[in-house]
Image (cartoon, rainbow, N blue to C red; front, top):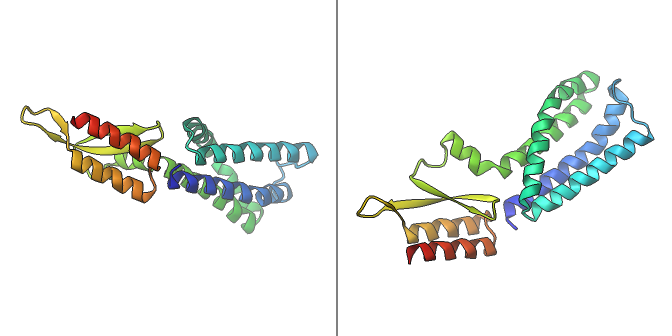
Length: 187
């Protein structure tokens, strides 16, 4: 399990923790929110499901990562509620904004490498993309052989892989699997 995914899970737990007082303040300051017993039970069930999703993300489950991604994208539609929260009470608005920020920072961390690649912030090297367990995208530099075909640069690839292991982006198991692939390609 990578350190980054553990951080993402912790951020989702934090967001859920912020959600409890946020839900209480919403029932007090937002006239369109009615918080009776059935609504409170429903909200707590949803929070429990999100906590389970965070746990699965922390374990590196790809389905949980993409489920969270889709739910977060749908959550963007509720950004107007953050503005409404500030109309009700400054603290309620600040809490809503904080919860929203934590959720989307977690989403950014999940997809950080992909975002950097899209924005051209990954160094711009000629690269070959490899995926570890369909969760962590790794950029592995390539070199050209004398025929002009891509050929892996084993020492560079292993160095990059080791950096990812040290940074916590890869687990030891993921590192070993990718190292084996690199060595087999070179053979």
